[in-house]
Image 1 (cartoon, one colour):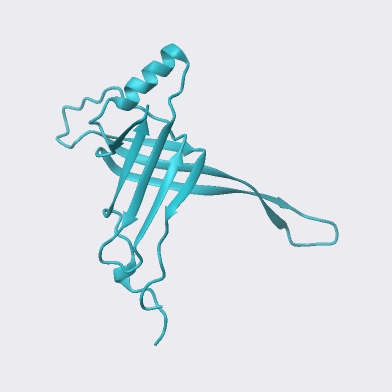
Image 2: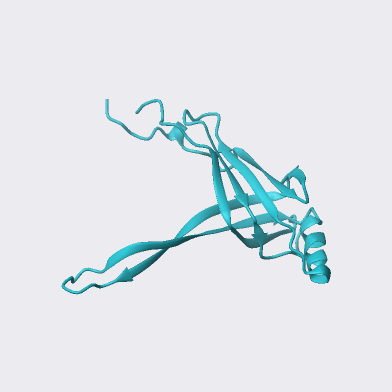
Length: 156
């Protein structure tokens, strides 16, 4: 039998959860519409003597991401206003997982530390919309831990 990716082993982005810990308080991020976190590798390219092809070397890694959130929680606004007045940044950790019960590969769970959401919505009014208010924010994080990882699909 040939090895192939069974569609049932792909992950639905609706299957998973995330939590934030701020000031020691852990709570589910119920207001998330979407959340993506990734590692962006910094690559340096250089030609060396005697070579026509450019060579590449990893130079570092940056944690970045994006989120779309429903306008249903004031915690980020409170923390940002506290930062404005005190200059103290409150570290945020985000822990989340993807786990689709239809899949044989299980769960992948990560912990992101020192997360900074770059956009905090203050107010959104629109007399022409009945849609829920959402806002987009890019984010950064300084470290990541892999708490659990996917396994090999059963048909491999």
